[in-house]
Structure formats: C-alpha cells, structure tokens
Length: 173
Image (cartoon, rainbow, N blue to C red; front, side, top):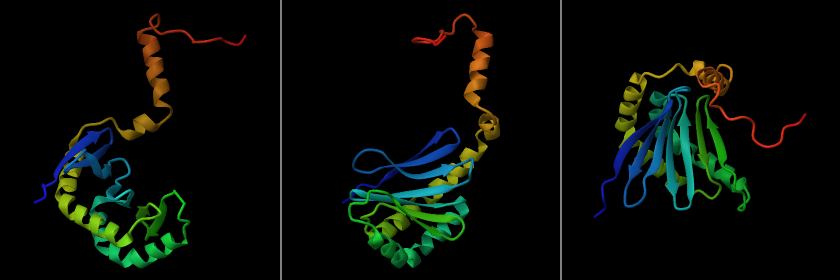
C-alpha cells in the first residue's frame, strides 16, 4: 500500500512553490510566478524530467487536458534529437503554453504523470494563488526599475557612512 503524498506551499518573494513529499525528499512539483502570472507543473520520469507552463493558472488546466493531442508531435521532435543531447526540448503549443522535456523522455509516461499531478494539486495551486495575491509586497516595478542594489547601497552609505568597508585588494591609480 503506497503512502499518500503530502503537499505544501512555500512563498518566496514574488512566487509560490508547491512541494510534495512522498517516500523521500521534498521536491518541487509546481510553481506560480506572481509577476508574470505564469504557472508551471513539473514531472520526473526516472532520470528524465520536464514541465509544462501556461501564461495563467486558469489556462493551465485546459492545456493539461489537451496534452495527449501533442504526444505525437513531441515524440517526433524528440526522435530528431541526438541520444547524447543534454539540452531540454521545448514545444510551443499556441500563444501561451509550452512543454519542456529532457531528450530521452518517455512522452506517454510524462503526459500521464503531468495530468495526474495537476489533478492532485489543482486545488492547492488555486489556494496558493489566492493566498499569494493577498500578500502585501513592494510593487515589482519598484525593485526592477533601475538597479535596486544600488539604491540599497546608497541608503546604507547615508545611514552607516563609517561602517562600510573600503575596497578590497589593490586599486588602480
């Protein structure tokens, strides 16, 4: 009798990671990006791995349901790759959806695992999106406009001018 997997959510910055623990170490099985709105679901099939992504969480479910339609095309693309190729293969499926798989992936097993995993965590993803959207964060544009680390250093220099270390190593004259 197998153990029932346990899921959790880690909120890190502007993202949420859905993690799973079943039999062994904790692994990430899905990811939400609150800046871009993208949603990802991951799967491992032995040593091979892959993921699917959609521009929004509400589009991920319909995309996962359509994955079997892309099996033949995915297999054809993988067959063209060298068996020693180590780069991920990407298949764009419409404007907002993509499939990423490692070169020796068993396509049918991958599709089954992604579909099963999504069905197991669909409610967890929706809850994570609801909770994550309620977390008060600095607007992302405040961090991305200019160089945020420069702003932090300038603030430190004004608050602690004598406590900042000088340059390390030789300086050119």
